[in-house]
Amino acid sequence: DTEVTQTPKHLVMGMTNKKSLKCEQHMGHRAMYWYKQKAKKPPELMFVYSYEKLSINESVPSRFSPECPNSSLLNLHLHALQPEDSALYLCASSQDRAGGHEKLFFGSGTQLSVL
Amino acid sequence: GEDVEQSLFLSVREGDSSVINCTYTDSSSTYLYWYKQEPGAGLQLLTYIFSNMDMKQDQRLTVLLNKKDKHLSLRIADTQTGDSAIYFCAAVYNFNKFYFGSGTKLNVKP
Image (cartoon, rainbow over the protein chains, first blue to last red):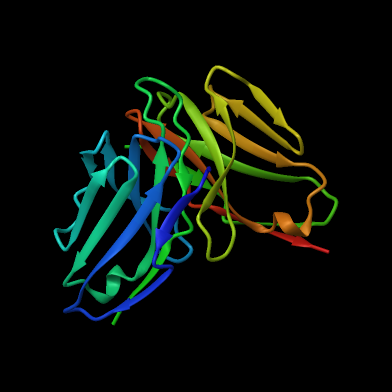
């Protein structure tokens, strides 16, 4: 199994809603990532979890709250989002071998629209 | 941080070779990567090269690395219409901070 599974595939939410994006992998990877990708732009790193601990937060607004319940699961909780937060949210995972060669495996993303 | 730059568009005819170029600024990146993204999908790892290598071949794909000039290229031989996609180069910084280039949209004409 070399898949990273993201749900839902599409999400429309209002600015007062609370929603969550989910990501799952069963490759035994110990690093998991959230990326945000606007149309016609490269992915931008938001968060990295390494061994279930938050290791990188790229100064993301607090209306995005990540959670890593276990080594296979990664959530992104959304609250009070703005229309400019509309984007494709990509989850990725990697082995997280210290000093080793990392390969990122991506899910197919959640296309988020904030109205 | 890392700056990774690519040209935005490339158009080729089916059967021709495609060459997609990338430049990066931080030479500490141990590995450099090429990813492919089709519309509405995530990124798919195509190939990678270790920074002490000059070239890597993987079936129709050839990666060339000029470390002195910090220039990376991806050559796709016998390009097919199914190769139409956006191609991103990526450098890894600080172990697992991946920086992606702006992406090159490859259009393959039949």
